[in-house]
Length: 85
Length: 414
Image 1 (cartoon, each protein chain N blue to C red):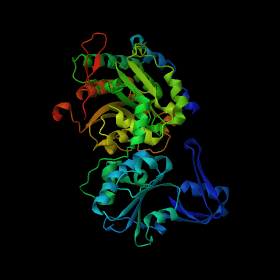
Image 2 (image 1 turned 120 degrees about the vertical axis):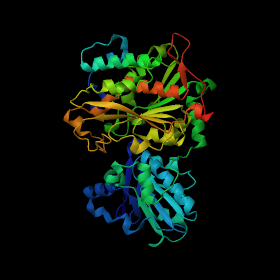
Image 3 (image 1 turned 90 degrees about the vertical axis):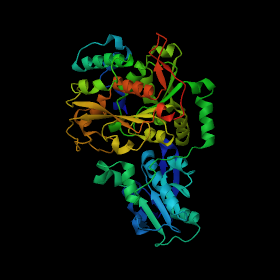
Image 4 (image 1 turned 90 degrees about the horizontal axis):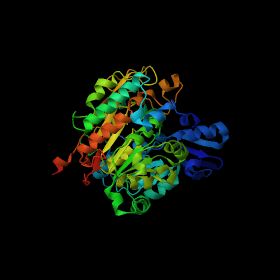
């Protein structure tokens, strides 16, 4: 339990409590900022989906380890409101 | 699971759940393997007899007509496993209405299933054989008593790494065409209690009520809490209530992180974060809470599956097991699956390590607690996917008020 209570990186609190003041100190920070900006573009409808960039940027993201990876969105049996009408 | 008889009284206790069962000497009980092992370690003389379930019950197979027979479905695992079994039990009852179907599960879950119409009774573990016999009302013999034990099916069967869990169970039961929707019992009294606790005002229903499962039952499937904190800090939809769902014994852990939530919407009175762990809800109350939510976010754990019982839209966060293996047949579901080059991955198709239990070997290598693959599910990924999905579902829309990005729309009964 004690281990769970110890954040792996204390500064992560600062990063997420104030996204406007992210300090670009690592590759992951750059990726976070790019993701954040693209997320805004998606909200404004300039790009279609926030997932589009996941492929592009997650490939260069590294976790706090030597593991490299990406995030893929899977959808299952979506019934949208249009289909219900 | 084992059938065991003791020479002395044995007390089975779960202090965290306030569960205590006294097992009397001379009676035969259905008990989990670890109980027998523990008693054996403490004093082997206390065990008068211990045998495998299949010494007393026939192994269920697909060719058996279960009418006028007894089927014990036994699982000592968590909520998810018990929900996966519900479509099968429902189908058995439909095909063999004169069968008696009993579920044997851990005490804390038994109330969630005992009201389901296809279970003739639900027994909490450990249960005396005589208690089951009393419920049957006719002699249980070697020829009329069957059991289906899910033990090791998910953990050890190699099909579990390729097939959706519901489809795997349907195959085990011999059902080709079966409704795979899970089911849970919603207790009306508990529903009222939850409404009184969390939905006092009619306007509470007009807000966007999101359930977010903070941690999974296992650390390997948990997104690290700093990221959940990040999600809460960057959430931008006003008039949202986020229910942080977790077990009561983690309340101090949750509190530690909640102190650090810093979202301007909270001070404006437009965002409420409700720490469910601090209310000490039982599982039946948790079921009632999920039934009242609009949207659920969580890792590969109980809340995802409970949400499906009520047709709730949900976003799953998956890595160690690919979402297809759990959510493939669910409605209104989006999953974020992490694909990594972690050396413990055994399936390239799914990028999954299929490791059960609590310890991620990669995390251990790196001297950390949570699995590093889950780090790819950043708050930005989760928030972005949630906004996109909520917009698709027409639960939120781009706001006309320039102060906020989104507004909550009138909810639809999906």
